[in-house]
Structure formats: C-alpha cells, structure tokens
Length: 160
Length: 160
DNA sequence: CGTGAAATAAAAGAGCC
DNA sequence: GGCTCTTTTATTTCACG
Image 1: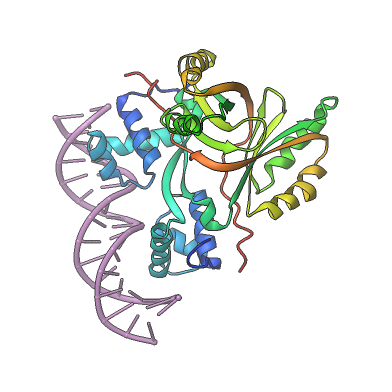
Image 2: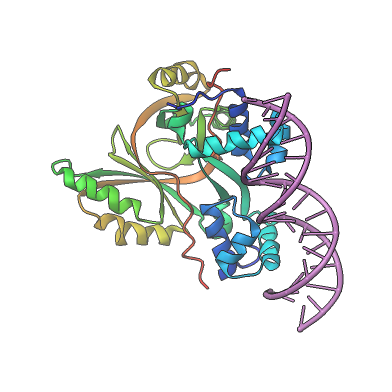
C-alpha cells in the first residue's frame, strides 16, 4: 500500500533505521551508498508519507521495574456493539496495556500488559480490567521468558 | 532492578525518549527542565547501564506491505528438553517472527508473526513453522484490527 | 550535581548536474 | 534522481560554582 514504491535504497534506509534510529544522516548515507542530500530527502519522504511513524527509545522492562509481562485474552459481550466500542476506548487509555488487538479465535481481544510484579497484576486485573464494561471472560498468559524480543519488521519481501 | 535508582529527571528523560527517540539533547533538556550538559550525562548513563537498550524507527506495517499480523500459540513436545531449546533457537532466527515468549497457559510459546497476506502466512505456516522440531500443536489468532499500537512502557510506578 | 561557554561536527536548504 | 556548497544548528568538552 505504499503510495510511492519503495526501491532498494528506501529498503536499506528502513532496515538501517530500524536497527539504529539515531543514525546521523551522514552515517546513514554512507551505509546505504548514497550522498547525504538525497538520503535525507528520502528519509523525509518516508516520514511524511507515514512509512516511518516515529522514532523511539527501546527500554529494558526489567531495568525500569516492569518485570512481569502478561498476554491477556479477553472476551466481551457480543450482544451490544456499543460494549465492544467502549471496551476499545477504555482499554486504549490504560498505561499498563502496551498493545491491544482485536483477534480471531477463542478471545475477542488480545492485550499485552506490563506490570512490576504479580501484585501489580492482581491490582490491574481486579481493580481495572474486570471493571470494564462488557467483559465476559479473561485468560491470563504470563510471559515466563522472552525468547525473542520485539524485533524489526522483515523487509525481504520488498523486491528490487 | 536498576543499579542506580532512577529519579524524577531520569524518568522524564525516559518518557520523552520513548515518545520521540530523535529528540536533540537541547530539546530534551528543555522538556525535562535541565540544562544540556547534565541531561546528556544522564542519557549516556541510562544507555550504558542498559536501561535504554537502543533507538529504533517505528514503521507502519501496512505501508511496507506487511498487512497481516498473527499471534501464534505453539505447543511443543515436553518429553525432550532439547526440543524446546532447539525450538527457541530456530524460532528466533525467523524474520517473520517479530516477538516470541515462553508463556503459561494453553500454549507453550506465543509468537507474533507478520506477513504480507494470507498466502504469506500459509507459506510461513506450512513451509516453516510446522517443520520445526517438536511442534505438537499450533493455534493461529489473526489480528483483525489494531486497537492500541505498540506503546511506551508506563513509568508511573517509579516514585519520586 | 549542576551551570555556562567555546570548538567541533552535523543537519538543512539553497541551486546545479 | 543524485551531488556540492553554504548557513544554521546541535553535540561535545572543559572550566567553574
């Protein structure tokens, strides 16, 4: 769905910036084999066209006291569409929920929740999640070990 | 678990850099109410102590032709510990798997998989995942809608 | 632990090939 | 579409409170 087709240079830019979002333009230009000016033009275009949504620091959850990640499957009442709408809105506003998707399968929603510890999760579950409107069923899957941390998107399928 | 306790300034630095990882040091210093020098010193310490693991560009999956996200629950043979080990290694090497966790509950592993489309997922499932050693059961949950995109870690629990 | 100032280096934007 | 040059701006280092 990219408006402008992404060529090999764009792809290399995206791969490089996914690995290191603080590359200076001259470093980036060097890596991808272009001079700084056209390189910067491409980066700006990728930003403005929405391909690059932003840049962020990746933190170590453990190091900031967020030792527990839980993947929470939630079923909501299907009878009222308004309930699902309201649920989407309220769940998006919760800081502990760092990602949420409407999914197929046993649950309606899948939430990724981070809390300091089990006590924190207890409070989130009983004090917050269970009080949301239309929640019918909750399934908590605790992350015991991170096998592969959040990683760059694969861009091999972009031809060229 | 942070070696050095994070104070209010550190917390504000982390919050700001999670929202915009390309802030210049002077902008950052302004936002958190510090002058550039001590601000930079703190950022360097946060980087070197591992609190900040890195910086990355966040891409729009749709815009790079990765329209389908699937959360895949995988059960592996429990009888051989070696199988689980091998599975961890091999799964980490797959570019389509952008995150993987060992989890409690019905599945042993939960994988986040991104592919261009359903055909891409078919190829990944039949051609790759099902051929991994020890895989006993696979449950595919398709992301129909992103309710909340990957978001910054909440740092409110850091006192001060 | 914080502030301020000066030198180095990079980014941004002009016009040109 | 890419390249070079110039202006503007940030980063870095150091001396100081």
